[in-house]
Amino acid sequence: MRAKVLVIACGAIARELVRIKTLNQWDHIEFQCLPAALHNTPGDIPAAVQAKIESQADRFEKIFVAYADCGTGGKLDKVLDKYGIERIPGNHCYEFYAGGEIFHQLAGAEPGTFYLTDFLARHFERLVVRGLGLDRQPQLLPMYFHNYTRVLYLAQTESEELQAMARRHADYLGLEYAYRFTSDQPLELVLQPALALKKAICQ
Image 1 (cartoon, rainbow, N blue to C red):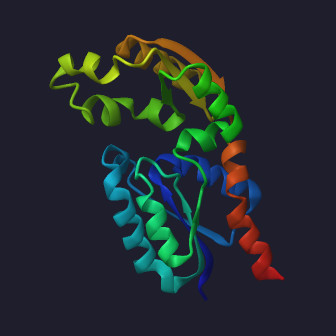
Image 2: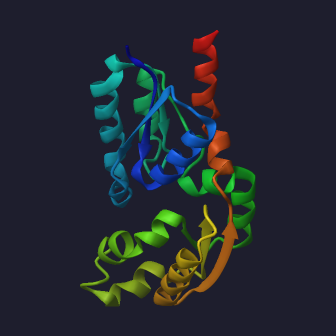
C-alpha cells in the first residue's frame, strides 16, 4: 500500500519536522530530506527536488515540498508548477521559522541581519566557516559580512547550549547578538497544506 503524502524537505529542518510530525500524529506523511548543504549552491536545489519528485512520484498519492524559494530565483517554482506541487510560501526558511509577518517586521527594523536557526547554530563551522572557505582564507570574512550589523538567532528550542554557541558565532563574525525564541509553531502552521491532504483523502 502506498504512503499517502511525501514531503520533500531541506535537511536543515529535519529535526523540526520530526517533532511536528510526532506532535500531530501525522502517520500518513513521510519525510525525505535533501542535503542542507544545497543552500551553499541554491541553483542546484530545483534539479535536486525534481529528481526526488520523479523518483518517488509513483509511490505516493500526493507530494508537498518543504522548501521556501531559498535563493533559487523562482526556478524552484517553475519545477513545481510542472507537477502541480505546492511548497512552503516565502523566500527563505527564516520566514517560516519566525512567521511571515513577524519576520518582515524584524527584517524591516534591521536589514543588515545575519540569521541563525538551531540547525545553523549547531552546524555553523561546517556550513559557514568551512562552507565559505573562511578556515582557509580568514581575510575574506570582512568582505562577506561587511554589510551585516547583527546576528539574530531565531531559536526553535530554548537550549542554553545553542544560545551560547550562537553568541560565539556572533563574536566570530564581529557582529552584535540578538535572540528570539520562535518555537516550531510557525513552521507547523505552514505545513497545514500537507495536513489538509490527509483530511481530503480520509473523507
